[in-house]
Length: 254
Image (cartoon, rainbow, N blue to C red; front, side, top):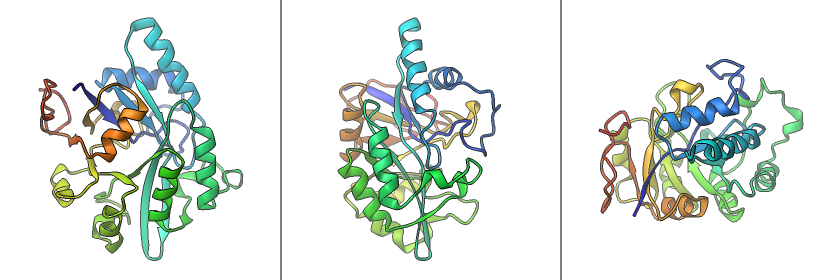
């Protein structure tokens, strides 16, 4: 079965904490993702998806010009509080139909995009049960991923929270991002996929962490099935029955 390289957590100049030039274009983003060796690239800005259309168009144009194909996955990053806990979730949806389900999801969590300025979006939170959010994402046809669970800076340290184990038992959760691949041991025996995602905020950060995924074809449907069947390898390692090269500790092929 073919193996594809994915980075499922990336930000664009739409967010105010973007670390690259404000003049970065959709074409720049697609080119950087391809140059980083990615096959799959998710756009996950904070409670926003305004640049997804331009990035999808850029990927189509570059593929027509060069034959280099990038599967762009529309999504967002939701910052959720639930009691004393904070959980970041990245919902992903099909590039053929993403605006309606994302808007429906924002309504479900009680987020009013019209009341927020771009400067406020990275800090916006909604109070809701994250397990219910993941179920709603799945009901809407999407993929629910828990973002950077082992982030070691700031106040967000999900792996130390009691709710983390509850989310691992939630069937609607497809995967959990880990910054440190050693922390993937926490997911051993669980049904969720361990994911390496860059959480990029600049072109040079795209693909700095990635996941190799075995699936029949480069499509959203096959990606969804692969993640929910837990058929991924985080960072290093070789996929079973695959001729794809192993990835080293930096997520690069060796």
